[in-house]
Image 1 (cartoon, helix red, strand yellow):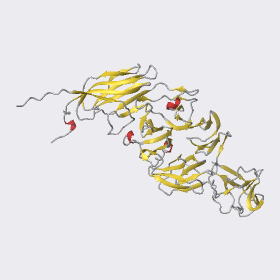
Image 2 (image 1 turned 90 degrees about the vertical axis):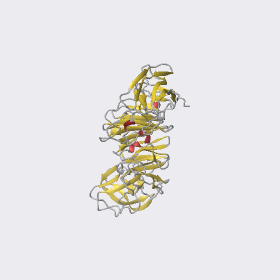
Image 3 (image 1 turned 180 degrees about the horizontal axis):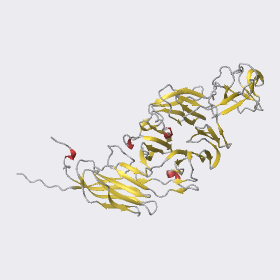
Image 4 (image 1 turned 120 degrees about the horizontal axis):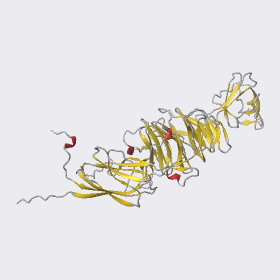
Length: 543
């Protein structure tokens, strides 16, 4: 005897999401992942929330060519260097980068400096020209042979331990010292500078002018580490004398000397930074560290083969004690050892033409421009290991000072970023309300059945002003435009039930589009599970 099969009614099922992770643009992302976003943050994780507003600082910088912050803001406007709002000196036209040593700001590529403590603006290269006399002299009160250079004109601008190159005459040359000779004594009237004995081949007064120079190498990379400036050009690494940003060729055989070395590996150096107390350099396909405690034992070692992309040296930044940067293969990070890639959630084949980075105690900020000229400000939350997209912030300059990140846009506006903008600094204005959105990846309910979306419930509140709102939209099977389900306006924290006209689908997407400040506590969707009946072959050809 056969009994008829009972007809099973479709089951209504519920899915609840209470954790909202960051961006995940990968094909294998899970239900509830965020495929795209603007102006969102992981600050309130596991909730989904809009980012904090920035503080617009004053004044606006006209014709901005460089920006930084060292106790006070400093910048280059056209050809003027400004510190704390005051003009300090002229620079050449063009974009500038900066390095800091003690109270000194070094301006590159001009090789100029500003000393905050002494309020002195000047050049690093020191060049003196005039007639001189080569003579015997003294050192430490004792007679010394052929060691003294006496000016027959103005005083010398050099100090003890400055290393100078003497050129411009062949009658009285320095003996086999193409790299320069080190000043060991300066007379009180500064008309005599003295060197080690037999520095000169003979004594006398040349008839033509000579040039005495102390110059900094031409460098593409420059940063401070261990009270020295470190730099690189081509395949060479250099460092200045200890606590002396003007001397790069002092090789006196002591611990405080300058130092340089070639790596002898493929390519040129592209970037450098001080990390965990060590000078750290990069080529496109290699990472190096300088180990040692002084110029007597410095040496250069290879540390890995994920380097910094040429032109992306400004992407280097330290966040939460980790070193982040942009490599030819995407974003990378080192926690003190061999670097590794960490940009996979941003999507396959995502390449940037420009990247400028900054870091604080919990976030890595990366302002990017792709090959089409589109800007995006990405933020990596190190506590959550998650990426977020803020907006199309257009900057070339970040700086970190006393727990705060400042950034200057190419239009001259400069900002105090994120949560750091509270409380509002004096003279600053808070950023107005902005638009935002979150586009979720496909919801498949993790089975192969068809389904019909029935209801959506969102628990939400609006911590900002009354002008805020949030629109909920849906799209089925990536077909057609987004359909608006409802718009929610400010009320007390509560769950909003959003009815949906059921439509059989393979998968669906939700999009939240808003204005002002809003945050989501949980997202629930109800659906009816249908049969295994699929759409007609789904484009599959059968024989």
